[in-house]
Image 1 (cartoon, one colour):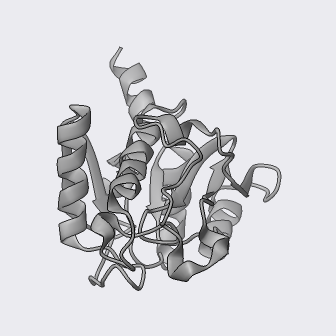
Image 2 (cartoon, rainbow, N blue to C red; image 1 turned 45 degrees about the vertical axis):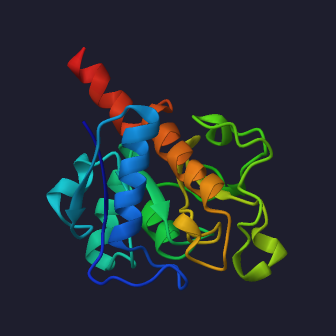
Length: 208
């Protein structure tokens, strides 16, 4: 069984970068219908919850506090994957990885724009030149077909989720094309579960 969750105390709307239950339900249903995976969203909890370290993919809302940064670093180093609100990865990301992960920025972890031929764009649907056309946020060219990823020890551990810097599921925001945006979200989940070093891969190795 594949699980994904979001860490949240409050719920906001798509336009300001938030994530709502309807979108989560749609993403779950599309994964089940399109890919044959049995996907379950296990609910809402905080970064310091013990369950946090057992979920292959999280969809967080808000930022971890100082006491939760260690758990975030452990999660990223243990094969976890984040569909993030942020379109860049500074601030608490750097603090968590440097302070609690013992990593060096620029050597052990870094942020860079994903190449157009990155396998996340063909993990399930072939998206051709990357992110869905028409998914730019507020018509800002900076967001057009651009996805920044956070890499830790060579593994992609986080990308912006589709309504934060890429677009809105179901075309809720700015009349965006929903289909390819949702396809990118599905691709992200598939890629996160199957890439080398993912939590799912590590668990399968233990079982075998």
